[in-house]
Amino acid sequence: MIIAAIFGIVGFRSHNFQQYLAAEGFRPSLSKTELTSLQKHFAYYRALPPKSQRIFAYRVARFKKLTKFVPRQMNTVSEEMEVLISASAVQISFGYDDVFLAHFDRIFVYPDQFWSSADQRHHKGEVNPAMGAIVISWKHFVEGYATNEGLNLGLHEMAHALQLENIIMNDEFGFMNGDDIRAWQQLASTEMEKLRSGETSFFRAYAGTNQAEFFAVAVENFFERPKDFSVYNSALYKTLTQLLKQDPLLLMRSH
Ligand SMILES: [Zn+2]
Image 1 (cartoon, protein in one colour):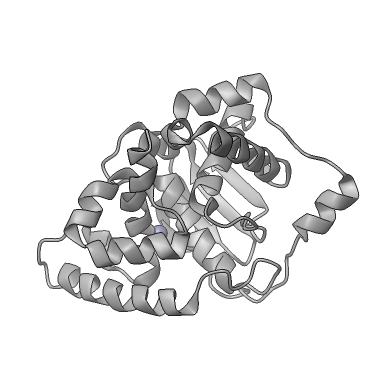
Image 2 (cartoon, rainbow, N blue to C red):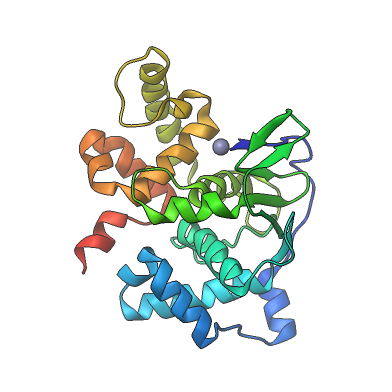
């Protein structure tokens, strides 16, 4: 669960989605089977009102269409895997109309944790901005969405990708508000100090590693345990609603 490489971050790997879509004249949509997968396995999608569900499904189809899924140590990435991994990316970026993690156009899928030669350790996921790649262990991706304990590999890696997308120079550059980012970093620092000094915290110890890991762990909890998160630290929670332009608590209350 690390950012594999920061170097190469200013490399240009931009799709211009609007131009691309206009040129191709296509409006991707999900098949019935794919919609059933979303309905069956994706609680966030189920919680959306019907109109938002249609937008969500369209965005999943679009993300899936413009992303290359590459199997590693297995034969294929199934349609269902592609749909659910795409849904994870759409979930975190749903508050932003035009953000599709354009820099990250390749997703490598392993069946289980994988060995990383970069730091000689097993990883469950990573984001590699130099390669424009997100890497996912399918086993841990599924486990993340199976429970709501604030541990979600898909959302964790997508959170890294979203934060990087915001600072990579392309069409999707700079969508997060600077004041919100500064407010977030300040509140996050206070929480990280608590974690590092061994004080009890709502967040797991790993969140104290650095600002990027804190953000990723906070995002996991934001979507999985929004009520507990907002009770624990309402200012931090509110700032994250501003950064992501969505509030899972409102989503839960509307149904
Ligand atoms: Zn991480």
